Length: 308
Length: 314
Image 1 (cartoon, rainbow over the protein chains, first blue to last red):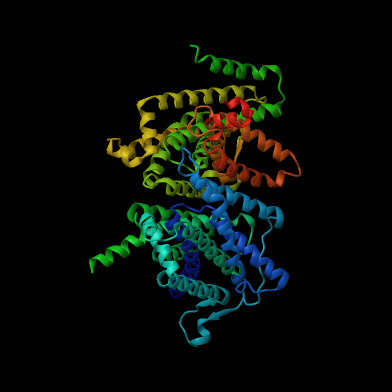
Image 2 (cartoon, chains in turn brown, blue; image 1 turned 90 degrees about the vertical axis):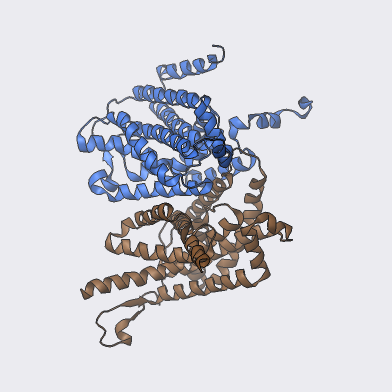
């Protein structure tokens, strides 16, 4: 019995830690979706780019992956701005039969990024052998005669804490600064924001940049605990999308909750059904959200507020 | 009669093509072109005419291929029965998928289908008892050694698809589809049951794609999840086939399939370019979307204008 509880709690902890990182990826996508009304299908590939930046900084200059957040996030910001300005914006103006052209365009961008990474860095699996990756905190260290044993990997908890810090910083940016407020106004009502004197075009560019920077930061945080290969993007794009559906389209708070739910759910399926089934679990939760909670967690939050 | 003359000439040309003694490599490429143009036409029905862009057509292709494969490996029937069986299986499957995914609109639908395609791949990799997992299914004996008969069968299937798509698009159904694409809310307010007609489009599209998948099993004699549920080689290439050829045109998918398959073969056979074929495809996709958003057939006038000397315009 104790073993069962131990396993369950351990899985839960792993799920929450994973969820915090997922939330960061999801927020990036949900911001872009809210402001630009397009889905960025190159999201995971952009994360892969950031991971390679952090990886090479570590391998060549021995810079800790956590410190390379300060390099990779700005780099991704500018990459995002460039993509938005030179590729996505022109397409918004083109007349075409299909309205989803921008989405297909981001697929093209993702393909190019993933393939270029394969050509330049080969498709080998890589990881950063940081010395704290194997360290962990144990429950028995703090509480000598604990009935169960739980462990907390140091790298995982560090990544989680930094992800939470970035999320809080973003929350302050969006709710307290002028620019953050303009971004939220653009997301709520583009025309009204334009009439109120918000530079909507610039907000779009900036938002795309911020979304990319967030996923870039998430990439750096994932690097010490995960491995890296060029084709890793696709699965993270899907994760980000499931989180946004789960959280409610365009809702940042929803994305945080959605990320944690997905993280827990995924680590539960991995423990009780086997690693290979995790993507299926992802899809099940996605389908369940669509059928039973089409507005996502955000709609629940909203109805609670109205109830008061 | 006059209007159908070019089509008859093209068909006659295609029918005598194997008789002039082409090498088996060329025949293989021709069969691939026809398979892709078939999937492209199916995608076009859903994406081009009805406006529901799907990123997961590999799901239907794979389910069709596995229908044939499982009939062979589990029931001991000939895999050709898969062509018949794939129709009901895919209709039911598409209906279920539509029930879930068609609640979403536009890009959200696109991503939901993408997720679905990936999940089916993972499922078929993990359901080892049923699908054989990563080992795949191997047909121990092929029906014919040469490619001629396969060519005729797939040509027949593609012709049927072409006629079906044409028939559907020129009927009331087709006008409903286009109305849904142009403005779903307006279509709904005009009394079109949009959910019903989107589901019909999805079922038709899925069934045709599944048929192509079932043929693929018979033709290649070997399937595994990574091949038939492939995101890049099936789902994305299908979209590219239609985007390059022309969205919402009858001949667009065929033109697109010819260009894409030959391009892929040229790139892959060149040792210097082989590794970069995804990059080149991606750049082609970006280029087409920015400059020829309606594809080669759809924007034909634009291309003609581009190559005409300036003076001839006046």
